[in-house]
Image 1 (spheres, helix red, strand yellow):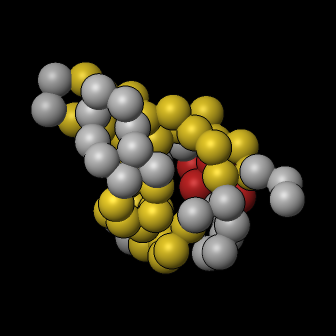
Image 2: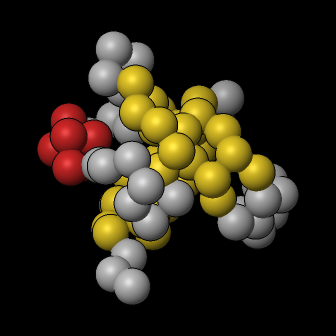
Length: 68
């Protein structure tokens, strides 16, 4: 779930479930590389996405809103 958005840094604070093999469930900031995906995000929205990892960098992409 999107907790907050920072347009200056292009980050989304996301409360997420466990990401198997990467991290436990928590709330943290994720960079969003895609302008199109970032501008579509809304605080309070539940999303599904992919965390990409390259060396020491990570970001979230392939973002889809989860309809309730």
